[in-house]
Image (tube, rainbow, N blue to C red):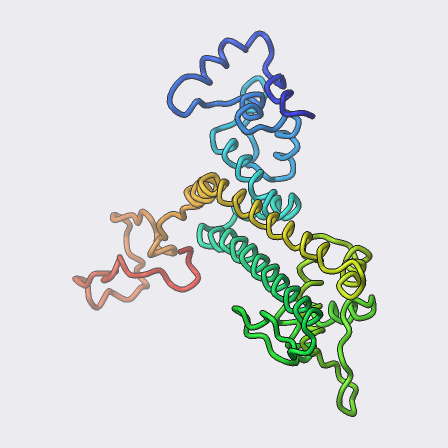
Length: 325
């Protein structure tokens, strides 16, 4: 459904249109909002609003007396936040993240958003390292007698050799991923020692960085294999350079989308935190809330040895462990 259809979707009947319109424009908050209002202000269609509500992206709408959905401004902000988050991490992860933001604490929600920023920064760093690796490979081809090296040391702490565990950690992938790339002919480690352990020299490390960046950009194995073959063939590194440039541009666009959604994400987080503010704990949960002062004492009970002592000397003490915070 196109964005132009967002303004046409409505759930209000003709008999309540005028009344709903007055409610919608009354007051600074403009609440309650109809499905069509939320669709128009968020850029989604009315059906998409309902679908995203069903997926848990936005809080469930209240229901008016006539059965129609009744939304609030926080629903609009949640949809805008979802749009930016989906552009940054994809729709599937964005849906689960929004659900977590709505149900978790402010602390966990802020940490989840911070983790997205960290991931984008790491992806950008990996793409830049792949670019430097590509330049180093090209420099070695153009001047093999110089002993290589090129620009590999430019901002890198690159080592001459790495084990499979070390390289996997440097790339942020699993060791099994490197073995799979080896099976697909994308990376060629050396076999050393009597145990035939894998050892990655500089050429293999640089190739692995390029493969990691391309795979992170969503390129399939056949496409990555063709790109890696072009580095040693007649095609040269131009296609690889173009794909890495596109990868960096894509990361920049995703980062901007996340930044643009920042205020809406903050509104979703703070709204959820306000709803989950816990009540003050009862310092004496087992105490009779209203003892009867006129009740006769138990004749078989021992008299109070300290009748003038405060029965609860510290009524403001902290609750015992296990009480609600």
